[in-house]
Image (cartoon, rainbow, N blue to C red; front, side):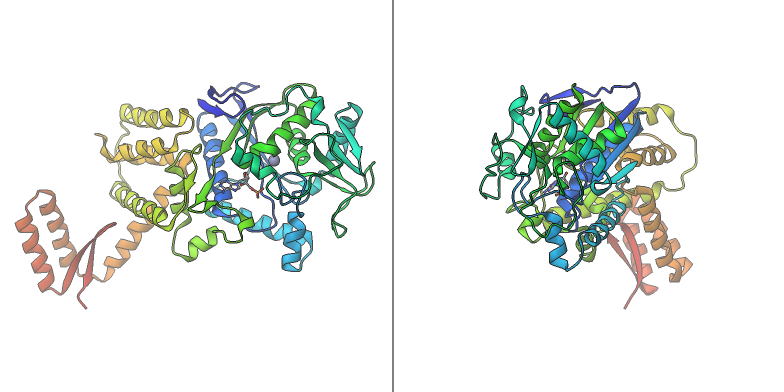
Length: 472
Ligand code: AMP
Ligand code: ZN
């Protein structure tokens, strides 16, 4: 499989340390508010990647942190503490906020068919690990104490900006608050490992440490939680593109300084979901959630489908119009599956292998989900029997996770129950009309429609197919 790697800026062959095994780490949510659908774009694409690796035969172990301490409103070391901000907003304790929004996050994931990672670890349960790694970094000369805090000294590294191509846009994320630079830092790029002399007097969560009561910086969390569960070598690290700088390069700096060797081979970054006015973000106040989409009548699967239609390395513009287009296409797709349901017959293995092969070719090419969806559409056109088509669709949906069969079955059932009150003769005539239309005998089809009308029923053509209704 070829997968773009932010470290090398090329589509690399995806290789792992141990044959057939993938150690995969994902930066989890900061649980101070609901996840917006932009955050969830990243998690959907990472979910597809994980499922595709499993589909390809890898044994994947995926770990995710929950950021419940240490993340400031700037991704650097300035601004307010996000968790504290959430607690103040809702007049609750930080832990109450963390519990509530962690649950809300996994509810959203469940609605979007995003699998829960094998290990989910809140930062607050790993304080001992953070202290161990920070102590070692101080001992090795990579970290220093200044003004009461512990900082990582980026000047000790041969190369700090390992991704090299930090764009202006991403640089701006790291320093966006425009607040005074921290005068304790020896170098501009240095970052906090442990806050002791907090500027937040009301910091709720504090722990004993060799440097006094304090709390960890955000970046150290991911390094330690990853090493705790996945060991010294990480195959794949994921996150949204805004995490690349400074968060991920800080993770690399401290992990490699601590381990004394290179740490993670492959960096996967999902580009942003934007609105017409720029990146969707919580700091802007207004943001869309899965619940809001549901309230507006969208099945969460429509949003998942919308995300899959675009490549993860392109920013995606969200608008109601774009989502409506995806909704229409998705409903049509489900309706096309209905006639294939419950098909008996032998699987045509040659056709099956070709169709699965087309899907794999798309996914092996840097996880091209939009081409993979095209491969799904090609199943309908392919010259093979319905049993083979439905078997392929089931298989592809192990990765796409769009509930294709379930939704088609529900649609079929709802059609059936709609027809419960329609007289048998009318249903029979409707079937005859369908056959006439298929045979392009439109005169006959029209005359059957007239007979149905005389019997008090109308036929409507909808996106999902033909509907029969009693006249009002
Ligand atoms: P946070 O909860 O802020 O730590 O973010 C959770 C994840 O969402 C991170 O991987 C971010 O990089 C990602 N993210 C944040 N904003 C967006 C966006 N507008 N589009 C896609 N991913 C995003
Ligand atoms: Zn992280």
